[in-house]
Amino acid sequence: MSNNAVGTESFATEEKREVGKKLRWAIVGCGGISTTHLDAIKQIPEIEVVAGCDIKPDRLKLMNEKYGIQATYEKWDDLLAEIKPDVVDVCTPNGVHMPAAVAALNAGCNVITEKPMAMSPAECQMMVDAAKKNGKLLCTGFQYRYHPSCEMFKRAMAAGDIGDILFVKCRALRRRGIPNWGVFGQKELQGGGPMIDIGVHVMESAHYCMGEPKPVSASGNCWTYIGDKPSEVTSMWPNWDWKTFTVEDLAIGQIRFDTGALMQVEASFSAHIEKDVWNFEIMGTKGGFNWETSTLFTDHAGTMINSKAAFLPGTQFNSLFVAKLKNFADACLTGSPLRAPGESGMAVQKMIDGIYRSAAAGKEVTID
Ligand SMILES: NC(=O)c1ccc[n+]([C@@H]2O[C@H](COP(=O)([O-])OP(=O)(O)OC[C@H]3O[C@@H](n4cnc5c(N)ncnc54)[C@H](O)[C@@H]3O)[C@@H](O)[C@H]2O)c1
Image (tube, protein in one colour):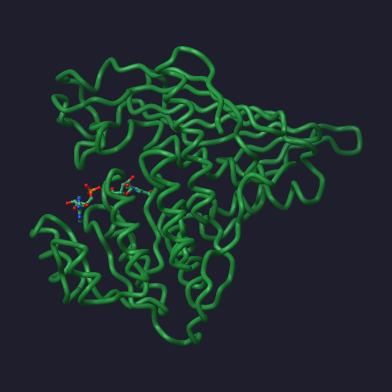
């Protein structure tokens, strides 16, 4: 199993802060997901939220009134200059991740961005370069790699139960779930549709479990057939903005790795299937794994065995956010390793970008 493609080193070269001190934390982008961060932060005493930034005054009002954030700004440059936070937590739409992260890194802050890391590998490179130049930490806010099912798989892999990984099937499929808030249907602000928005979650956790091998080529296709039209069909998030919808409804892709392994990814906001799926399955030479059911498939003493975890702690959505923010906070305070450094975000971004490029070109494309 190759682990050469993705470095896991920390960029931080500064002297570490004394443990016991609080990180002065600022949030840029105070929309939906920022409130999940704020709820998780309540369980992390090392973090003190000192400021928020959003272009919408009503979101700043909410931050102030509901979450007690005193210092609020409409421009991150003003926040960075006046507050000088230790950390900037970027929770804006994807198209704003790169400029906000680079500004914060250049201002001397450690940065965590929501997923996906950015819109393109070129943007990710600018962020990684800014982190290196300033000697700061850059973390990608992937949370599913903290799911205990991933830990279970990693342990089984280390114990030799899986052998060599051959094929990984990733699925993030909604029967009908086009976000009716934010800018999720606008390609120029998000970089794409369900592949970059939800496929990314399953891909990142599967890629992490695989040991982050180097992606070398991609093929895929994308189709738009529902999101760009008005609809009277009853669904959980009706009345999305179909007039500005420029992303795909369904994307299917395949990634080839330098190990010879293949990953198939299926992502959709509008798949004609029986029920929603959020899962990856791994097939190896000796055993296999189902992430959703936390089940290992092996041969033992002449019998094919399915071993399901009897108990796994911390599987709730909020627990995953606590784990990801705490991993980053610990890295900032003590220099402990980041589980999702910028390089991990970059590798996943290259895979997504490869699928989109292949879909546009109508043929397999190489990934550098
Ligand atoms: N990890 C997860 O499970 C998860 C879940 C949902 C969303 N996300 C990610 O979080 C990000 C935001 O998603 P959301 O659902 O919170 O969207 P949202 O639209 O609810 O929130 C985004 C906020 O950013 C603000 N914003 C836009 N441009 C800005 C700028 N230039 N400066 C400051 N603020 C700006 C918007 O006004 C809005 O309040 C996306 O990248 C998305 O992929 C992650």
